Length: 201
Ligand code: GTP
Ligand code: MG
Image (tube, rainbow, N blue to C red):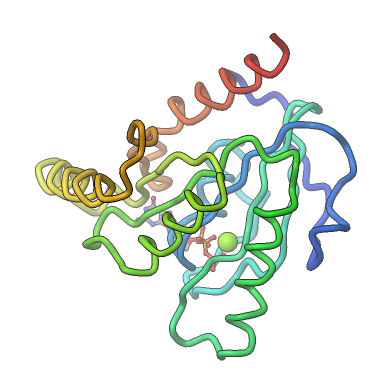
């Protein structure tokens, strides 16, 4: 799928104020600093569409980007960064959980995971929460430019093994990407394209 247009629409701290269109949407979620905003910029081929930073905690609101004038990409705040105060941590967590519970337009979530690290407890907790709340999701590993191929394969295998404990009917789709090398995006876009197509059948 080609992204012909990508426009920032609005930022919100309240899910009830998110755009009222019935366009399908796809949300990017994951730990702070995992590369959500960078991935959105890469998918759209626009360097400064979503704000990125080397410091965790950059995205603090729900950000809607209108793609090809008929679907949305959503950039969400990250979860689980240790240095954020307890108060703002729970504020973000509330915002994220309200988004996933209330947003009827959401078709699929993309859960981003830094390929360099062993499975983190907080990601497992979040995966369990998504499953319990019937949120459909795919897994997108980020920063694959930082690891050699054999290590990537090893880490992905370990992830797959950890996912088995959730007794899912099938494993979620898994993608391996790098915003630095601009690799792995075509498959993510193809999945979104297919999901959009299924909606009009
Ligand atoms: P928050 O908004 O704070 O939750 O972070 P985020 O998940 O949106 O991360 P962001 O896209 O702002 O990227 C965080 C840092 O990781 C930035 O310094 C990016 O340049 C870097 N980064 C993102 N993706 C990649 C990647 O694929 N490879 C490498 N090497 N660095 C990346
Ligand atoms: Mg961000």
